[in-house]
Length: 112
Length: 114
Image (cartoon, rainbow over the protein chains, first blue to last red):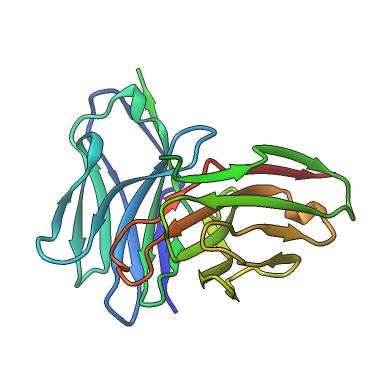
């Protein structure tokens, strides 16, 4: 069985500050890792994904994530956040059966 | 290109009523799934399908039924609504063979059971 833990349920940050949203996963097999973003009253949109190769993955809106196999982590980072980044962020793991397992979500609150 | 379309967007049910949440995709994806989203719990898989005529249970299937008669449609039925089924429901689809591709999500259905 696989599981995903997002260590922070809420992250408040001031505009233009850097941010890191943490994600740890457990799985006994190779996985594919994803970060999704959910803006208020909307569905989920893919931010970025790790499939293989380079451990640093760049996504949309200036976000990036680093896959660390030894620490089973896939933390999301942005060097300078904007008010429009206020949203809920979900880390997810996909296994061989196509099933996506989600973390509990992290609400990013960007303050002016 | 509509992607994944869910209807209705909002619904209020009384305890014991039944209803069907509709989901349709136009991307010819083999894999379709239903999730429920509850605060602090992320999204939990209810049911999924790997193709027409094939469905299986996810993590939280009790109280829900699905069927997949066509590639495009994957309705979710609530047999006898309970307050514990108050949630936001998302339908998602993706290619099956290429498991490294992303899942596409609908806009969600916000269901309240009173």
